[in-house]
Image (tube, rainbow, N blue to C red; front, side, top):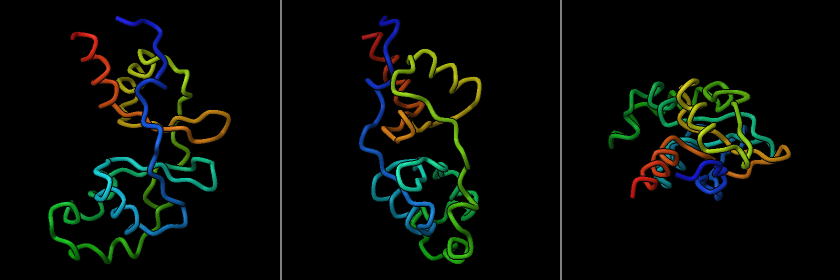
Length: 139
């Protein structure tokens, strides 16, 4: 097993983001269109939050992801991204060791973390990325 592998080897580098001034419908569109579960919220290049599919499902009872478009759209119009997102999310740097990242996910129960170097978003890493990496070690 590789011991000191940095998470830069497993992170997603082309990150889908939303601006904190966008509306929640845009978040839903991007989650659906890209088949993703987490989106960093940015203000310029700075990560100011993260919003997940689960955050949206809590508001809409999951209707927007089960083919019932329109059922909870009023809720999405009433709230802003800033009201729903996790503000000031924990971030990791691209040179964080994968094992250390796995410990963060286990201890703090996160499922995704923005990767930030020198104050700028460089990627996103998820529990799925870590699991795939560990599975590859057994091949």
